[in-house]
Image (cartoon, rainbow over all chains, first blue to last red; front, side, top):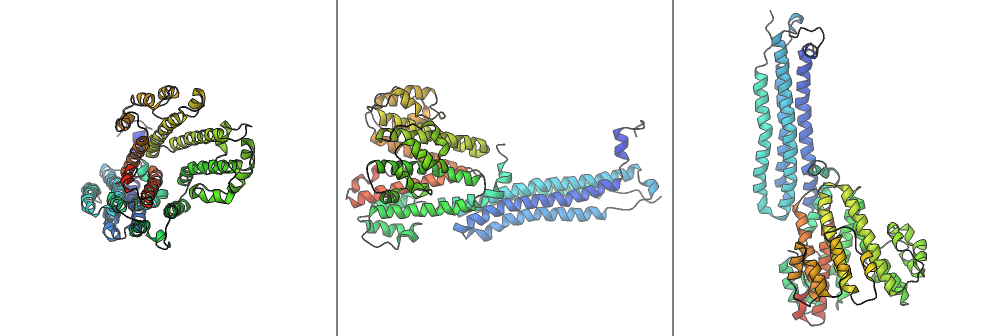
Length: 176
Length: 351
């Protein structure tokens, strides 16, 4: 711990770990949904326009929208997992190192999942838009571009895996 | 910032971009042109065209057909698609789409003024105007006697008003002055469009500025070749060249002093993109130059579709439609006049 009576390090460790946890949970769901929505509007507007001249593409290209939606679902799942990790600790223990550690773990887990899903959603959305436009011109391109989308949606999955691993070790101090 | 437009382009313009790409797939292919070139009569042409995207526009035409009817109906299809896009567009795409038609407006103004000079009837001239370039009060152009009146009565309310500051004189309109007026207006229009595209930035700026530079250079070459042997002085000729493009400023210096086509060729061969155009036509021949320029233009327009999330696809689509209408007009004229051996002289395949 810092020894000065006022310093940034001291200010940071006096923020309640519950603040950090709550912000982590909020970011996890909020920013994931932002990414999913961004991806859906990018791909949806191109899909609607391209389907006017080529109506056959609509049912297949909804897969792109589903991949974007999956990103939001990852965010929801991780938010639910994170909030089950929250426990009450007595006031005397609230600024103990294990409490702070648990708070930071939940915060970081939320950030990881939120921002990984944000970029994943945008990525899948942009590829989905190009996929719809190419499929309208030449239907043999659809499956090939879908492979690119699958790689893109794996990015969100990486974020979820690391987020869950981080949060699984968020143990609050036992009530002494 | 170049590269980040993919994040926000689709908010306003994604739908229209997808529509214009769908329309592009309806352009005639080489197979269609081969079928059309083998037609014996205009009715055969109509039959082939009803199987394409032009079907709804041509199928109710009674025979006997004229070539002008075919061209008119095909232009109508282009105008319908353009208006459909324009009414759904928001800024800045709507301004961009309007800029595309100012060239036709200039042509219409010049057509009416020339026709009035030669004492033609206004209604007859209005029918010959290009529908994309119409504006209200176009009919009152027939009343003007000189450029100042032209501006004051009619043009000050149109989008062409800012382009007139360079060419308002009190001289009376005659054939020579009208051509100079047309070229001066077009020069101002191209420069304005270029600045607008640069302001838009991103991929639009890059691709459009390349397309507009080619247009400016092509016009410079055409002005040079058309003014060889006329009484246009070198300074006047230089004033008609746009101040952007690959040829600016050194190519313009050379072109301004050219006195025949071979000197033009010598000046242009120093620029690699244009060298390939001039190598396709042999010495002393300038009829094929038009076709060579059209081919190069079509190649560049098709390349603009390779990138997504920019406005140049709209410009490219309208230009490609115009090229297609030119092709159809040439094919119809050759078939109507029984000169099918010359059909391939001027048809530029798009795909």
